[in-house]
Image (cartoon, rainbow, N blue to C red):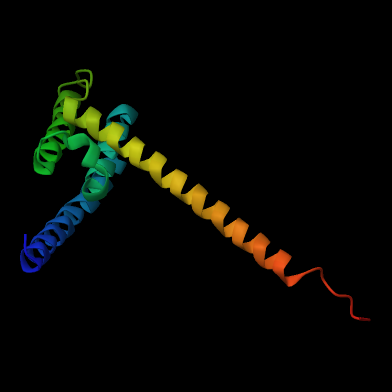
Length: 141
């Protein structure tokens, strides 16, 4: 793939993501007024997965396209709303929704480990600077 093709693909993904985010915001507002806590929670999970699709769903794809995973996540959310409207129990998450959940959890664990490592490195550097400066000198010296 040439640099131009990669740049074009990146631009298309960015545009698509901006459009998706534009749809998620009103959906999240609508979800917030749903009184059924189980449905609200499941729909919020779906919104969370959709918001981070590009950086998180890498583990959920398993040979499928990201679009397929997104389609299945959305299909599950729609199935949940339908069941709620029919006053039926919420359906079990489909395989793509379950894998997307696991992918998000794995990425969150990675991000937490990175943040901890960065904090440890920051503290190590701070300790090095402090020890390199030597002991504090009193004003009389």
